[in-house]
Length: 300
Image (cartoon, rainbow, N blue to C red):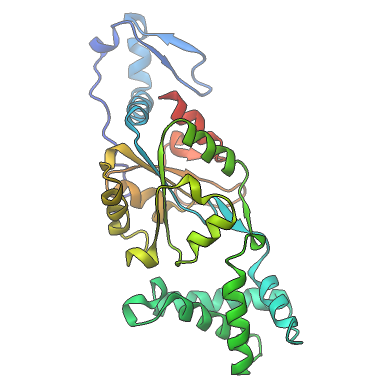
């Protein structure tokens, strides 16, 4: 996979920049509106890459017809650590396991299950519900609980519980950003590595009405970063890749994967999280918060 961005820079020459033109250049190097003339040709040469990326982004926003969204940790996040939910479900049956122990064993069980049975094991004959039941059972076994009948009961209750809005919360700015994108007339959809419960979760969180369709990896049969899930979304919408953009929080699965099919993309960052993509993502593609997306779109 290439680490280079696929955005093609506009073929702008110094002679073209000599024509009167107004462009707002955000950032510390520029302030306010700049009227281009022969006097600023040297500025263009000094900041050629920055001009190209900004012009490309403005042009893309003018043509934007579809905005697709990742969900978990982009629009919604778990209200509590997984271990707390699992511990509470066990206490109903008078089984007491510390949340910290369950949180640790969950991550181990989830990682192993994902490795051996990717995308809910659909290609290996599993259902997503069975896949999650196995994760829950293994999580408790690693924490010292082995009674199969009890574990099956806990797994069923947790599967239903995670459909409810009480276990999810919106990220700051999510509802307002979706509402304003809708007001701008931008069509929106979901592309998410999730199981079929996502439709119900979005409905319970009062978000489903914002999206024309919700495409999960379970439904598509492919999980991000597989290009086919993005291509299927484009096919459903009837929108060309260069007229679509994707928003997500993962560099490989969201930002890079969308660009590999010719879409534009934006990367939502989390404060305090280390990253190894900083040099690969232009600053104007990085969203410190969801509300920053609106300023990029409105600029078009």
